Image 1 (tube, rainbow, N blue to C red):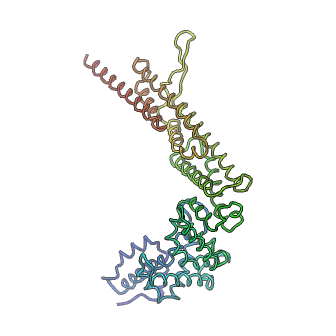
Image 2 (image 1 turned 30 degrees about the horizontal axis):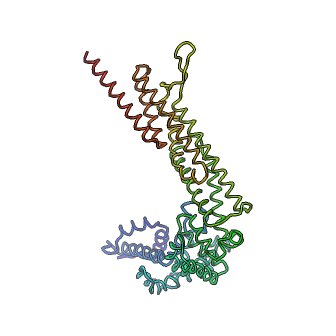
Image 3 (image 1 turned 90 degrees about the horizontal axis):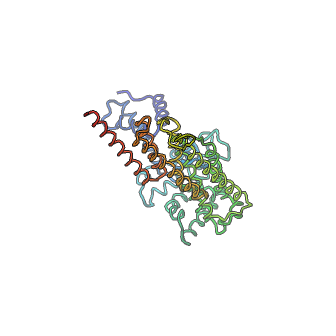
Length: 453
């Protein structure tokens, strides 16, 4: 039976290489090597299997650098490279060191022949970037290619350092801290920017970016001093974090007065992230007030505190607007403020107030860090009193037969209970709901009695 021609193989190889991992897994299941219907199908199945095996070997050999081929999830700037450059460098390296590839199939949790093979393949990938850059990464500037090659050079060091990263991210003892400093020295011996690059590799493996400050400030005995760190190659990591803080502060400042659910969640995430970074900076570095870093952090704190206070004021105003009071005439010129029982029971004002109240509650942690917690507690106390009084007076109107629309009044009371729940005034919310349920029961009983008559 006929097999695939060279042209067909070339076209199919290009298509298979462009497939994502999930698509390749699907193709692998759809074209099993065993039981192929004809020679062409068997050839295609083997091509798919070879690509799948090659990717597994690539992922094992280049595992220390794997996160560097995608943007960070938290949006913080980091040293990253296009996946295509990695794949092309790997293909060149695999071709040069084809005899080593089977050793990667025996990879395990401990070092062995597979680690030796992986380290040599990292070196081969570095050589591919330098010697065949026109094939590997043709449109990249020289500096970017050198960064990629330098990171491949550090693959073996990073492979042995990563198991120790969790200890460095906590409170390392003297021996563990000495191991980190030795790693930086070894990396600098590999290349001029080796120390910074090895920290970049470690940084790519850390989801909580602020925790990397614990590593950066221990890369040398004097790195915990702001003046020393700010003039070292490690300063870039603090600069990245502060740049991201500034960006998030700007986003919070642009938050509208009626955020949707997604916007509110993003605001909480941004505020919590800024609080974590600035708190970690306080723990790891003694920033001078007049230094560039000190000025940036102080300005961020001032802006965030003002933004949180503004959100609290907006939340209070929104709750009052959703459940307003209206002046009611008692007798003659005597008036009093009473719940407006003809207010809308649905729509944007209701949901905007709910979103802002939920946002204020979710911002408890950042409010503590930025000195706005007293404002938040004061708002909660004021709203608890206001909403409780509003609901009780509305229910009194229902009980006295003064409510123009009982159904509407009870729905408004339900909104008040919802708002009390959002600000975590749970006992007050339960009391309001019990009274509303009693009113509903009394109304149903009265209706049944009137129908019986």
